Length: 247
Image (cartoon, rainbow, N blue to C red; front, top):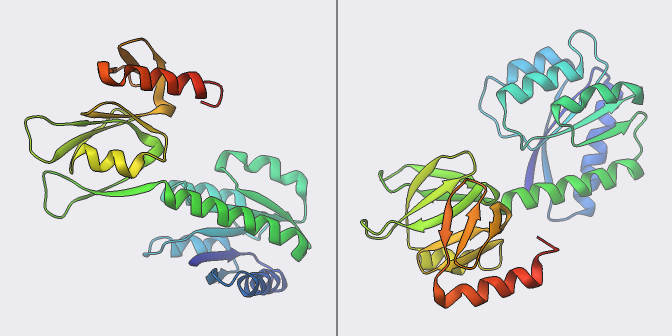
């Protein structure tokens, strides 16, 4: 796995230290490699954001000449998705409390030691792997080439479209609905180990979006009511009896 990383710091020595730590980490973790870009000012990096890229981790110095790291992070969040992990690096930990509005992943205090760097990177790798597993790329039903990229956590429920052959409808937590090519039984097989249940042959529900259940219905956070077939009522209720505390 190759991760695209950025180091933005106005100190050459601090950039060199982080580059060395990334190299050392990649040697220890043989399945992880890094493609790293470095910038010595926030303004220089900000101009780079107008070009194609796919960053995974960004190390940001908070105190830089000109635009500071927190202001840069605000611009990054405006232009980029929330999946980028922002790791702030600072000589003054008291400044870090001002950064929470930009969703920082972790903090490193200068001078950074490898013993501090390594566990932060371990956590970052786990987060990236978890995020990747939670993404699905699906073929939209009304186009030959269109794709829908969604998080499994954002799916409220999936249902068969009876009037269309081999087509399902996905309802997301933001209220949007998409028609996707496929059949519900394939989804049930793929998601059986995830947080999905099948209350009937034509529906799959995401348990994290269940508000409450009754004998014959499941009430979703979207306001939708999903019917539980007679054949699966016992199975569904036994599941919730076993897992209610965990859910």
